[in-house]
Length: 140
Image 1: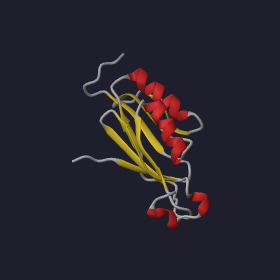
Image 2: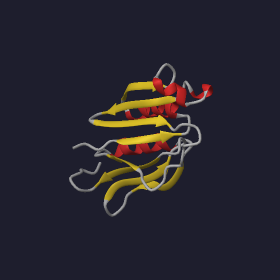
Image 3: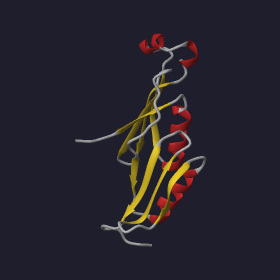
């Protein structure tokens, strides 16, 4: 069994995924907009170029998303996308990159369970946790 996060954006899915591709070193495998699909009749003309479905692969992980149709977007709450890492420097790099234009809830730092842990909501409204757990991890 595999769990994948599916994120909903308020019209900026394409920009977010291109940003994530750079930050995480992933590969966008699909970026489908409404235009030319059966779903095009369900959105207004100005929404045709918005993303109907996107998929990015980052290592063995998959992240999927779309732009929520007009009037259906709700601010994400009650969850975070957790990034589990084993390299402190990589965690610091990723947290720094995600922090640009973000609202940092908890600065990246050492905790009783992690060499590094931090929380933020990025500029696209997505809540993230960056975590380098102590269990089985070598400190730098």
